[in-house]
Length: 168
Ligand code: HEC
Image 1 (spheres, rainbow, N blue to C red):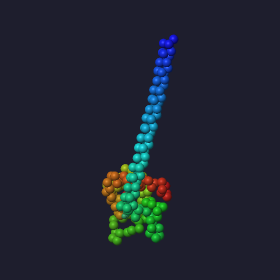
Image 2 (cartoon, helix red, strand yellow):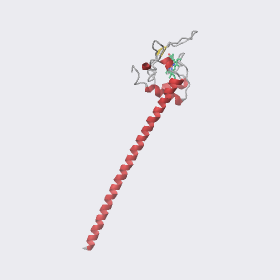
Image 3 (cartoon, rainbow, N blue to C red):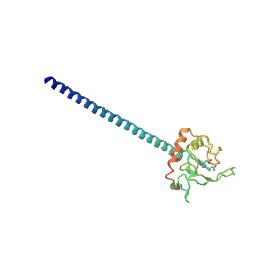
Image 4 (spheres, rainbow, N blue to C red):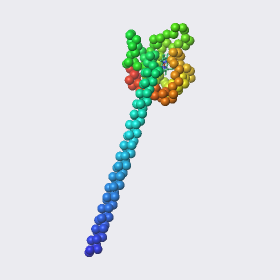
């Protein structure tokens, strides 16, 4: 009788032991997945932070270095850039003193990239000066030779304007 009681106790303890083990396994599985999810979302946050840093760099290059808006943004009758039509292309407000062959009288819409251009086309153009037709743009478009990193930043910034653009 005593022996039977003892083995019953042992059996009970064993069952309890495996129950606890199961709980521990479940808890570690939960912690593992929670850790994986937090790592994944931290990566995403970092990605967003990186892309906004790139866009800010692109904005700086476009607004302060390349001065793209001087030629690519329409002006009001006082000569002020129209912010709501930022980089949407315009008739140029400058003319050469002497005739320049091939002088382009207007600029294309580059907010969200020119029509039909891919990101790759834009990066090639900004790093080499060669457009999608395999040619240089006509004057007075400067033949920029940006580094690839800067060209990517400018392209990302221009793409970020797509939804803000007044026409699109
Ligand atoms: C001095 C005036 C001027 C400035 C500054 C300027 N552009 Fe232009 N851009 C032009 C003109 C003019 C054209 C049209 C050229 C043509 O029709 O061949 C043009 C064309 C372009 C094109 C299309 C090129 C093609 O061959 O189809 C892109 C893209 C472009 N500009 C991007 C930019 C960017 C980005 C900046 C600033 C980093 C910039 N431009 C600054 C005058 C300018």
